[in-house]
Length: 106
Image (tube, rainbow, N blue to C red; front, side, top):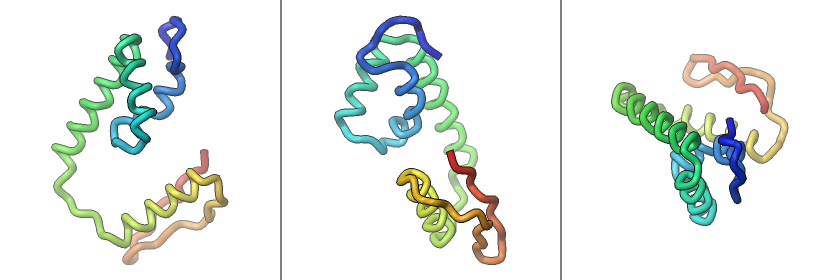
C-alpha cells in the first residue's frame, strides 16, 4: 500500500514495522519518523488506527490468560533467532507435553 506521495519514510517501511511501533519495540528516533509519516499519510494512519483497534480488541477479549513462562521464553528465543538471521530448527518445540507448530522463516 502506498498513497503515491513522496515521504521521507516510505509507506512500505512503515507498514512492514507497524507492529514494532504499536508494541513500542523500536528506538525513539524511529518512532518519531513513523509519527511524522502518519501526520503526512492518511492511508498509513488509517491502517495504524485499524491495527491499533484490533490489538486492543484482542487484548480485551484474550488478554486474561497467563502464558507459561517457559513457553514465553521459547517463543521469544525463536523470534530472536529469526530476527538475527540465524538458522531456526525445523523441528517442533514441545512445552509441557504440547507441541507448537514450527514458525516459518521469513
